[in-house]
Length: 229
Ligand SMILES: Nc1nc2c(ncn2[C@@H]2O[C@H](COP(=O)(O)OP(=O)(O)OP(=O)(O)O)[C@@H](O)[C@H]2O)c(=O)[nH]1
Ligand SMILES: [Mg+2]
Image (cartoon, rainbow, N blue to C red; front, side):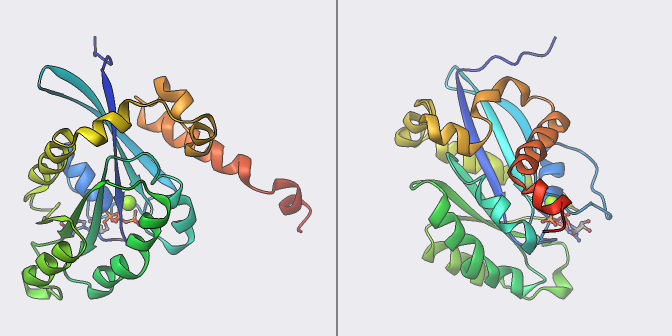
């Protein structure tokens, strides 16, 4: 039987513009086959994994947010209480690189916790002939924003495992983050973060997606909508 026990829960979020490959990176990390027709994420998806380090067992929840502009506000609700964030761009699309500095990083600075371990991820490195952002530009950006940096290819399975390993190793090496992870959320924060009280139900991705949407639908002004208001 699967062992769902753990001593500490760590949370990671994937952030970035539409179609940069966030879901594909996660699919690759889970060793699922690459999809050329990966569906665009609606709202948010959750993947849960477990890791053992230093004799402790950790539950790692990885939140895959939607990059479409219409879901930007939804994404920000998932920045709270995260120990690590992956900021993903597509090396063949300069706008997605610029959007990180223009949109996603300011959003995270506003809604995410301080001290998060951040990693800049330049994905689609397999498409070398269409590259618009050089590796050096990625390095400089990461240095400016205090991020780790890696270029990946979800399609060719290049450096994806390494990215998560490096990110989580840095979290485990940061006592302040582990202390914050162990602290219970404040009552109002648990409510606004959405799921802290329903933790036991996270182990099935589908049920999580349903819960995520139930939560957002419950915030939607249904009476106005039904009346056409
Ligand atoms: N060549 C190549 N294509 C990729 C790679 N990663 C993702 N793709 C393709 O890029 C497209 C978008 O990938 P997704 O994983 O859905 O992107 P996303 O960032 O999750 O997009 P949203 O959910 O809409 O925010 C899909 O057609 C993938 O097949 C990669 O490393 N190389
Ligand atoms: Mg996606």
